[in-house]
Length: 161
Length: 306
Image (cartoon, rainbow over all chains, first blue to last red):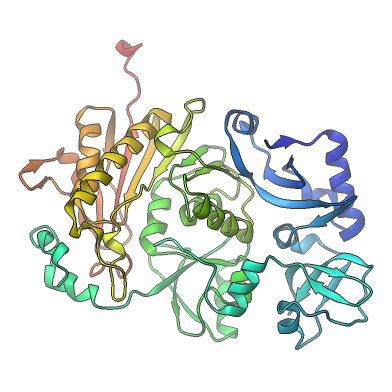
């Protein structure tokens, strides 16, 4: 069941985005955060939302925003793409010519101007999504099906007629 | 000639041209995601990468994809700048007339092209329930919605005809399972209607879905019914009892490109005359998938009904 987060959890989520990625509070205005299992979802907070959350058995509510990894948060690529303009800290710009290697899952050696942990990865000036910066280097955390579509040249599975 | 389509010779205008269109590969269309990028920026970015996209008259978000690599394998697609979607499918979503602040239901939503377009048209400011019974297809819908930055969709997995009655909606889109004749172009699978029992079975499901959708709709609410089939059993014959009984009235549809009107008769059966206000989209008239689209308004209760 998707449950709206408490006020303190809401604050914790906003603080995470500000402290880790420099996302100002205003960029998160208008979203309700709901939680199910280890995933926090962001959904537009509109009148009548509670009625839907309570009245229906829900598979997904808005956009997956954060996932709990042990005691840490991991941002989703969908969230980083949503907040792209607002993300100002712990951003790694892929060096020219390294995109393919990153997409293939190779560990890219640095140096990178970011703290260790989950980072926002940009390529060609635009947001790409989530990466993990560790001692060995930078590794993709992008959703596998999306990457397979991109490098496999087959589109993202089924489309509408 | 596809044998299953021979029975449409009398109802499809310029039938030889229709048959000829079926032998041609369909063009690819994409819908720019204006939640992420403007139309001009999209065009320029795609051109700079060697992808020519041509605007489609009448549908501001639609572009024809001309050449270059497949539309699903670009960085811009990854970033949610556009969605691959047929013109007819875009038109079905547009016809619903969704407004910010409303509560919308897409009863058979996967793979999500129409539901995500509704979110785009309402600037992520309408509550949209995207329902589908198929777990696998819901996964595809969610993947598209996440990539496109959709924050106003709630996904559910009910059998459409048993969707809970607890909540009333302002507008509902019903695009039920159908025989998919409209997707028959070069290289596509053979039409299911080669066995006419398929259409009869689908008719029962479609009637149950649209009947239940009407119950979920608030008084005066709008319902759009669409299929990607030519079969009258799955189109006019599904809607006729609803219009005839006065549960809803048909709102004439004004499509931005050439289409044929809904049928008034088929195989000796007469349909309500207002059904000619529905739209039949054929590939020789609009170079996309074949479709049927009808817009209904649920009747407001009369004072005597209370």
